[in-house]
Image 1: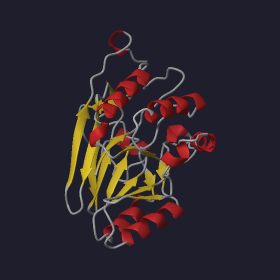
Image 2: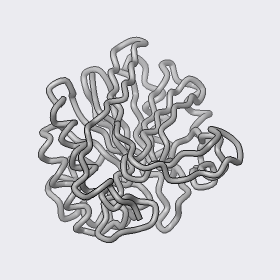
Image 3: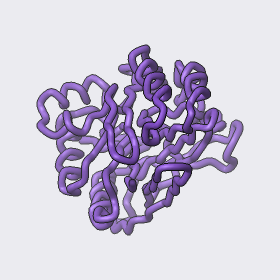
Length: 267
């Protein structure tokens, strides 16, 4: 199966330091590109921070844009989505209840999706609660099932860069690692939160962090205490192809961005 993985869009109603002023335009043009290649995709995953401010208008913008793609959308909340604001919008939206996969498994012919809400209201760091941990353990224990894809906002594998590691702390990561160690087939983990794309492994499980198209950061060195700084536009997202057995290919899909105002000014 083939799917696109996006994260940390940070749609908001006011300008804020660290998020580009043209965030809406960037997301809109990225979504257009997903739509352009939708014939070769089965679905779309968004691993949180659809919004910057958890405002109703921001969730509406996200919903309106992503509905137009015509693909199934599967998502979990990020810390900037509340997550209380996310769940309030969930109660009033016709679409969000079918998109939200928090604490539920979506069974497909060739893979399984399990969503986890790792967010703590008002905090940048995360945790895996007991219910989510139990679900992961149950799915890991299944034998003969299609490959398991776990969708969560906070990555269980930190990037090793001090400024990112502090905000990416995930309580329960060690327990999750112990569960994953017992998997007959390695799981795939899709995450966000850290505004730089990277990949890591946890006892055989492959973790893919999507970065952020609207709030990308970089540093002079990839590890250690090198300070992070805003990078500008991340003009790509990721497309995964997962097949029964051991085949899993991940490709960066670049999209063309034309700013609506000069040079995509940032705050």
